[in-house]
Length: 632
Image (cartoon, rainbow, N blue to C red; front, side, top):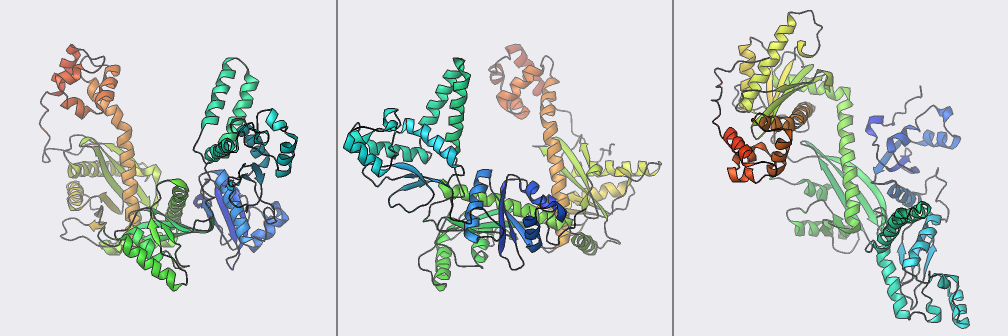
């Protein structure tokens, strides 16, 4: 078994999406940059037995002290970001891209009287439009050859163009229709420049006429059974789609921006920032912040603007997920910070709704979500943190011992219909999914009655199993603490069910929004620090119970709605489906008039009358709390 490095991340914490990873040494220098279609698979390949690694890779792992990664939407964007960072950091153990070679660009010299299109690996031509870079020069040449059939812009050199002018004879490209031949005045310079402008629009993604025409030709060839020709056209379409693919990792050279992304949980939020300078992503950083205690205080975006520039002054443009309450005040404050650092220019704060900045902001948000997931996973897997959480819960609730087994209950329904409940189990601070239970509720009027019923059912099963020889698993294992999702009314209902069953198990409730912990019949809640491990564990249990309950409720919703209609005489599955599709829910079917029901396709007047009379019949009187008995 390979030796685990102290800095090695857990496999579960590494995302499986495409991205770019960086190995850093003890001084924080980037020593290797790589890309991956699946980061988890690629990074775990480095953590093998040393003798299984290549010599250069083994030395790189020996020098490494940490590894980080940046998630991107596609593998192609990972390739572009890898290229940019290798050029930026010049890592010691990278070979590719450290020399003067670079990816090719498609260049269009729009500033010339007779524009030219060609491939180049460097920028610097004044007035030229550059598209790319692109990872495959061969594919770029093939695609350009296809595009020139629709946009026959000259692609010859200046000397070849002058020679054709003198001879008044076009080159081969002019003869085969891949050049408009302005050299022999088949088109005027103005007409040729219009072609070049159209090509620029096409390369910018604003014109899909060529792809549409090729698609039409491919379909015609397929219908004529010319499958080889259709296959060649298909390959051309794929090449064009590749060259037109949006590239969020390469932005305009004149863009200097700090782009922030946010992902939040109830108690904690994760942020990620890309520092873009001169059109290049110079750094990518993720960090975690505590969420504000209420919505009236400072917002998460304002916390980013306040604390997000500790490692350097802000850029002239700051892109955030949403604008702060007083953007002008923050712009002035950040401008002052920039001036103190010796940089001129005012700072503008904005959101990105479209264009390359919006696409880059989407990638930053993706990384913020991954940062939050990784943080929560690491916090959950820390044994010392779980031990502290159980100890804090014991102290805060005055328990005799730490609740090594906690059971959390939640109720879910759809507007009062189809109520269900869930029970999730945490042992030693970790979920025990094989002990989870789901409950279908009957004869309940509200959440408190539902909590009463589900707790009573759970305790009855506990008492029944204690008299058998069944091993202590699942229902038969008594919890050290019962947690319900809700405030004082729900806690009191759970406590009443426990008392009536003659069982003494501590119970508390976690109320949403303010995250208050309630004990039975207490006038005031227990307030845990928002950064405490105890509140984090209770919140995880509450959120997990909510997830299980709502998933179960959704899985039974469609069946329940349809079965309610199927109970009506003469209504079959197809009729029930038509009614649900037309009205959207049983509640709307109940509220529909007879004329509305008749208007449903496939529902005649007789069936509509039957449905109307059945749904309008008075319901049986509800069961009161005093007469309801807990059911297994």
